[in-house]
Length: 125
Image 1 (cartoon, rainbow, N blue to C red):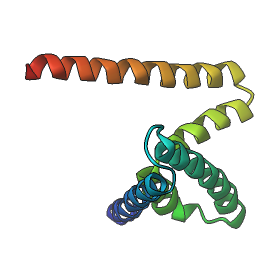
Image 2 (cartoon, rainbow, N blue to C red; image 1 turned 180 degrees about the horizontal axis):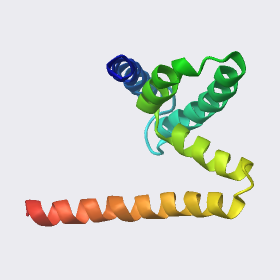
Image 3 (cartoon, one colour; image 1 turned 135 degrees about the horizontal axis):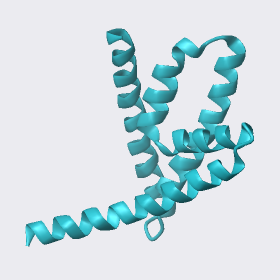
């Protein structure tokens, strides 16, 4: 358990650093005005999550999943885990549950960020 935790922590540090570098690079390349960095990270993370889940399952390498998937990709973007969860539900034939999960995640997350902002602003003032 402790070894797995260290793998996730190390992977998380690598993923978070990659996210930062991607953000800096995207900002320099495209500039501000639209959250291109977040969009880029979410798309790349989702692509790599899809590729990794197939590759690791095919090669019997799921022991590397905590480091690669939870650690690196989790540090890079949690959107990749969200995408995998939604697709897994869909692939299992649970289409309505997948749609519910996607809508609930997006809508409730937006409500939560607004609530967090409003509550914190009220407490600070």
